[in-house]
Amino acid sequence: MKDVATSTIVKVVCRRLVPFVQIFGLYVIMHGHSSPGGGFQGGVILASSFMLLVLSDGLETVQRRFSVAMVTIATSTGVLLYAGVGVLCLLLGANYLDYSVLPSAEPRSLGMLVIEVGVGITVTGALVSIFYDLLSFE
Amino acid sequence: MNYLHLVVTSLTGLLLFLGSVDMPNTGDPKSAPAVHVSPRYIEDSLEETAVPNMVTAVLADYRGFDTLGEAAVVFTGAMAVLLILRTRREEQ
Image 1 (cartoon, chains in turn brown, red):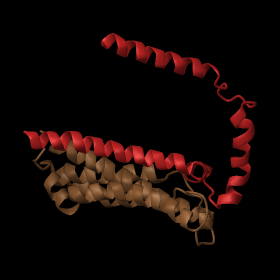
Image 2 (tube, each protein chain N blue to C red):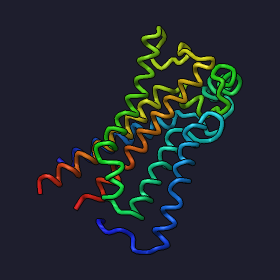
Image 3 (cartoon, rainbow over the protein chains, first blue to last red):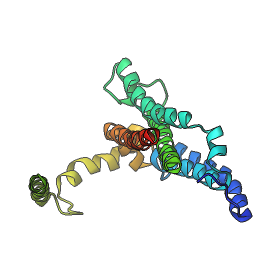
Image 4 (cartoon, helix red, strand yellow):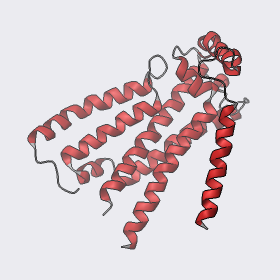
C-alpha cells in the first residue's frame, strides 16, 4: 500500500482526528488508576492513531517520523521498563514487583503508573510494528 | 504421524475438559476465590494501594507478575510477526 489516500474527506478527517486520538490514548494510560483504562487499552488507542496517519499520509511519510527501528526499540523498551521496576524493587530490598519500597508518598500507586506506561509503550510498539510488517509484506 | 497429533490433541483436550469439571460455578458465593481473595481486594485494595480503580490494583499490583507475562506475550507476538515477514522479504 504505497499510495496515499486520494479522497479529501479521508485525508482531512484522519489528520484532524489524530491529535485527539493520541491525547485520549495518553489519558487512558495515565488515568488507568482512577478510571477504566490502563496500558493495554491506551496503547491500542495510541497505535490506532498511527494507523489513521498511515491511511491519510501513506506509509513512507509516517515511517520517516516513527521509523521501523524506533518502533522495534519502543516495543522492547516497554517490557524493559516493566521488568526494570521489578529489579529496582529487588535492589531496594523488597520482593520482585513489590512497589511498597519505592521512594514516594504513595509508592504502590507510583509503581503501577510506571508499569502501565511500560505496558502502553510495548502495546503501541507491538501493534504499529505488526501493522508496518503487514503493510510492507509483498 | 498425523494420527499421533490427533491423539495428543484429543488427550490434552480431554484433560482440560476433566479439569474444568472441578471449577466452581460462575457466581457461586461459596467458591474459594469468592471467599478468600475477592473480599480482601474489595475491602483493602484502596487502603493498601491508594488506587481507586480496583481492576488496575489487581492487574498491576496484586497480579503484577502475571501482567509482566502479558506484556512479554505482546512483545513476543510482535517479534514473531517481525521474524516471519521480514526474513521472507529478504529471501525474495
